[in-house]
Structures are given as C-alpha cells and as structure tokens.
Image (cartoon, rainbow, N blue to C red; front, side, top):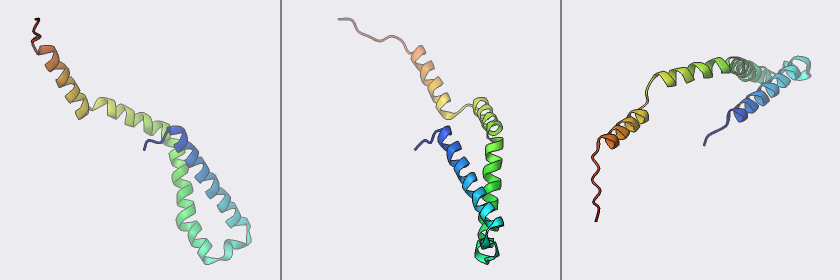
Length: 98
C-alpha cells in the first residue's frame, strides 16, 4: 500500500501536535506528579516530538539526497529493461508473408 507524501506529512503533523499538547498538559496540569505519566512523557512523548520535528524539518533534504542516490545507481529493473530493448533491436525480422 503506497501512502502519498501529503498523507505522511499530515500524520506527522498530527502526531507532533498531539504530543505537544500532551506535553503542555503534563507541564501545567496536575498530572505532572504521577510517576506513570512522567515515564510516558520521558520515554514516549519527548522522543516522538524530537523525531517528528526532525523529520518534518529535514525531509526535503533527505528526499533530495535519496532521489539523487536512486538516479545515480542503476537498478536491476533498468538493466533488464535495457537488455530487453537491445535484444529487440538486434533480432532479425522473421515475419513470413503469405
């Protein structure tokens, strides 16, 4: 299943906003003193905020670098396609006219 870039960015933004809202409630709300909430914040929410923020910030550069790398290295499909095209060009015309 292929997910569009727009859908990926929307999911990242929503995750980032929910995590930020949770962090605000943690810092300014009464739940900040609960140890379970503190552990969820330390080990889940803050890393998720950092990762989604970095991905949203660096995604254009990362996509550009990956695209250049993909264009620079020939894939097996391109090699097979090229070989097939060369065979078709070199094959003699063997049609029989009756």
